[in-house]
Image 1 (spheres, rainbow, N blue to C red):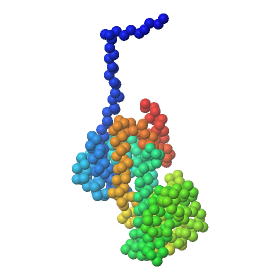
Image 2 (image 1 turned 90 degrees about the horizontal axis):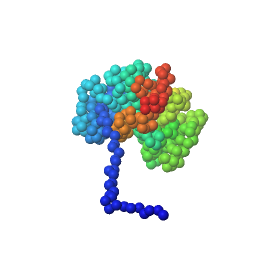
Image 3 (image 1 turned 135 degrees about the horizontal axis):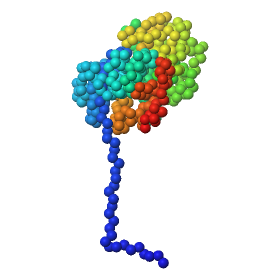
Image 4 (image 1 turned 90 degrees about the vertical axis):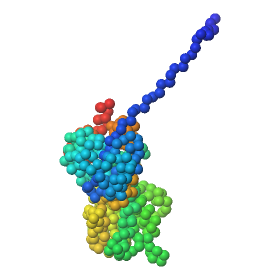
Length: 403
């Protein structure tokens, strides 16, 4: 026979104190934003609005004098947001995290401090071994912002810049078709009773999609070429209308380009180089006064007749066809581009603070790791290592060995 449980009147239950997880102490960042002096760069990596958010969260931000001038963000805008205005570039480079909108130059590489974090773009055609050697020597953590992925696996900064480039390509073509810029005096959209301008877009990626959107919006007749049926289908679905699409078949392409008033080159690079699909002979058969906008010029160009131009001298003529081949199109609308870059980088910097600094977020986020090409003296990008004959180190293995 089992005994009944006996509870003494003197017995009492005392609740234990609840143990709460103590959040990791936020790491405050010291961010430096230099003024860009190379690559005709007018963009700035962080806008005053983004700086205000960072400063209000306890971070320190230093901005070089006139850093945002090219995007019409002035020193008072940054100082009112809580940033410190610095007049000496060497003083600015004492910040622990440097955020740039143009690639690192040789002069800037000498100013970098050991163990700094640098977030900037890289332009492979202009990258030099001397710059990489400086980064290795100083054990810099270098992140290419165009290679940063978001949680959905896309490249947010590349997409934003591609959207800008696509829309700008059509607006640029409209400008050079007018008499004011020595064009043949055609309104891109056309009017009642006058046939619309014929726009040919080579490439159905994000650039091609936004070029097509803008051209359709202005009332142009649009034809799109790409070798990917999937991209052509996706473009039509995204735009929400049926339009002329074709694979890159030379006879059809030559026929259509001869009749085009505007041709936009927007093909994706293959192994870092854009394939040339429009030959010199094809361009020679284009109508006099037609406009070519080669958005892919930074990776070689789609047109055989293309050569690099600048914002100061943006065009040249060959076979009486106007060529616009500026590599950094987004810099021409720098305020919009700066806001797009800032919208991506500001939340990342906030997350850095929450995860214990840049090293913490690199550990935690595979999308950020994808952008790291230099980590504390090791080259972690296989393409860069192979090109410059440096030793390649896998970043995941490097990080796992430090845990």
